[in-house]
Image 1 (spheres, rainbow, N blue to C red):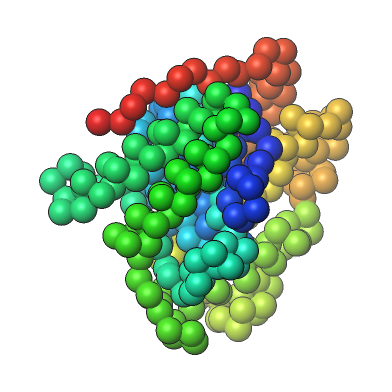
Image 2 (image 1 turned 90 degrees about the vertical axis):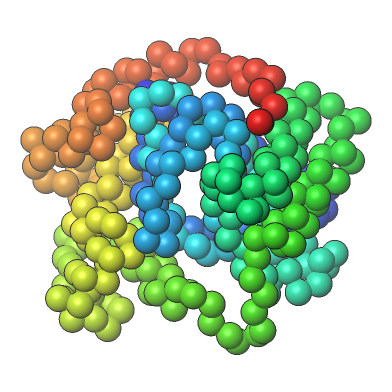
Length: 296
């Protein structure tokens, strides 16, 4: 929250691959998903991630993949977290890579003694090369960027994917569908007086089963998630508008300023006023991303 810098995703040719570089500090991104597959390569700092019952830490020179529509949340602590972000539109890229949408890619940070560590390190090195090309931002490197991104994708498919026939359900995809429905409903109605029972009814669950399901798959209670979504939107409004703190609080569905301030500080480590002031100070200068250190 103290620092937030993000370049717009820009495409690599017509491949359906987009890249950007970003920096976050003390920022929490509630559970969400993307239509595109997302690859994050950590350039500096570390970040905590929750995905598929797993709590992971992504550290410098490590890479993680969130497959298309895979629900995940991200939390960076006070130290600056910088990363390369790659979005892959499987549908568009399938013109060049037939059946790409039938591959489920699962790539998490792995230890050096893992049998797949050599392949993982190679993919991280390709991500490092792509970062360097992105920093150079030279037109002469565009073709090399395309080729490097495709090499990364080919290795991910070769070593970290499962192929499924059309219509066949893989792993927790049914639960993931339900989570996406819940998340979509919350993001559409978070400004309203939203109750747990209402959302449970929306997905056809009893109150008790909904509570168990949500905690099992998300690692937090529904009320905690709802508050995180509201506070996350509050953070965006504080950074990007001139609305007063009271106006922001009312817009996102809070009626008690004491509770709002307490939750905001609990999630971001700053009061709403401190967060707005810090953001204003930090946007006076650009965050420059230096030449990355080659992994391993």
